[in-house]
Length: 538
Image (cartoon, rainbow, N blue to C red; front, side, top):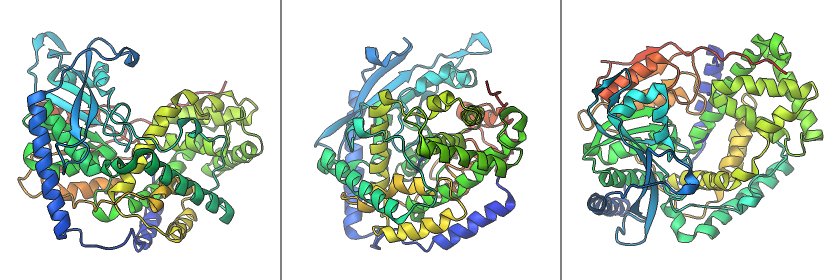
C-alpha cells in the first residue's frame, strides 16, 4: 500500500465502525491456502533459496566505484548480486539487483580518538512497493545517524523490478504523467467507466511488456532476495531495517528464515494480517488519511494570520475547494489541475515537514500567484521514467501478492460508502489499485506472518499514533504476531517514518537496540515531535 494530525476520538471511532462494516467485502475467491500443491511449491522455493544463498556466499559482491551517472560520493561503493527470477528453479534465469554500501566508519562521532567495533551490515528497505533503498548509505552523513554509521556498514539496494534491478514497466514513460487531471471525490458513473477502462489497459500493459516473468515479482520473492543478499554480504545473520511496506516483507523474512535474524527494526508497519493484504489495508489507509487531512487543515487554521486561508478547518477546506474549482476551469501553468493539487496535499499527509510549503502554495495561488503551486505540484517530466517504473513495481507486487475483488461493483460499493465520510483519498486510492481487479498473472496467497516464543530474537517496532499511510492498528497487529517484539509509539504524531528523525526519545530506543541489542522490557512511548513552523507567504 502506498502510499500521516490529531484523530479525534469520534473520528477514530467512526473509521473503526466503518471498516468493521467493510470487512464483509470479499477479497477474492476462496481456496485452500495450505493445499498440497502450495506446500510442494513452498518447499521447492525454500530449497531454491538455500541454493541461491550458498552460491551468493561463495561469489560475494564485487563492490567498486559507482557508475558515473550515479554521481555518488567516494565513500559509497556499488555492486550487484544475482538472484533467481523463480526460486523454484534456482538454476534458471537470474536477475541482478543493484547494491550500494558505505563501510562502517568505526569512529565515535563524539570522540574521534575512540574506535567503535564494527557490527556487520545494516540492510535497509524504504517500502513502496517500488521504492529504492539504493541511496540509503548516504544517510550516515546526517548527525542523527553517525553513531549507527560508525558501527555498521550501511547497505542499500534496489529490489527486483526497481531501477537497474531487472526493471519493470507497464506503459511508455512518456505517457505516464497525465496532466492536468481531475480528482473527483464523488465521481460520476461515466468517470468510473473511464477509469475502469484505463485500469484494464494498464493491467494488459504490465502483462504485455513483462510476459511470464511478471508473476515472480511479489513480496515472498522480495523476502527470499533479502536472504540471498544477506549471504552475499557474508552475514551469518541479518540486521535489517524496513519502513512502511518494507516492514511487511521484513516480517515475511522473519517467518520464513527465523534462524537467520540478528536484529530487525520495523518502522511504520503495515498490517500483515493475510485478510488485510492488500485490499482492506487500502480501505484502512483511505479512512486514516481523512483524519490526517483534517489535522493539516487545523494547523493551517491555527496560522491564519500567516496564510489567510481561514481560521477554522472548515474555512480552510472551503479555500481548498475554491482552488480545486478554479484549477478545474483553468489549470495552473497548463499542467496543474485538481488531481495535481490533491497529490501535493496527499504528500503532506505523509510528512509534517511538507505542511508549510503546501499551505504557502495554496495561499499564493488564491492571491493570484500560481508559480509555487506549479513548482511543487506540476509533473516533473525528467522523472517520468523513474516514476513509471516505481508505479509498475508497486502494481505488480500488490496485485501478485493476494486475491483482489474482480468485480468493480465490490470496489464501487465499498468505496462509495467510505467516501461519504472519507472523501479526501478514497477514490484516488481506488484508481491506483484498480488494475489488480483485472490482473492476468497468478496470485499468491498471503503467508500468515507469525513467530512463536524464542523463534527469532526480539525485534523493535516503531510507529506514530496518527500515521495515515500505515495506520497504527498495523503496528499493534505486527506486535501481536511477532513474539517478543517491543513496540515504541510516537504519541500524538503522524509522520510516516520515525527512526533517525527529530525525535530524540525515539532515536534513543532505536540506537540502544541497534548498537547494544537493548530493548525496553515492554511497550514504550515517546512524546510527539514539535509541529512545523509556518513559512510566510511572499
